[in-house]
Length: 168
Image (cartoon, rainbow, N blue to C red):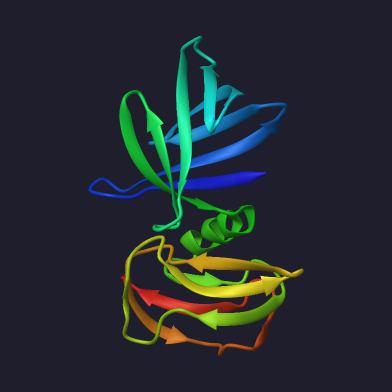
């Protein structure tokens, strides 16, 4: 299972996380990769041990007002948007396609959250696709301006069908 955390704020950064099983995760940030073992402490806390023998605690709490997670790590607080595994897959394919947002699987376009000409930021939700009775927000892979919308709410979309194009 793959997840992507996006740090929001002055220095937007991305962190990729792959669940390796049994509390082990591979984390990729700033071109580096390392493995951690996570043990729950309760109430949103985790004890983390990395592959270099360093240990630290992380505390995760939902910020429902901002639809984000707040993470406390090394006496610092960060806000992260957590993408679902489906959105993480979409992000990987969208980034490769420049500024295209495509459906990661067959489904129905439930809602468009932007219009042609709207300025968007990287990570901003653009539309909602329902697949297998689950709604998935699809986010902008890059900051820019919405140039084209190829589908309308209610349309059936296939896997890989481009829904929105963004121009940097």
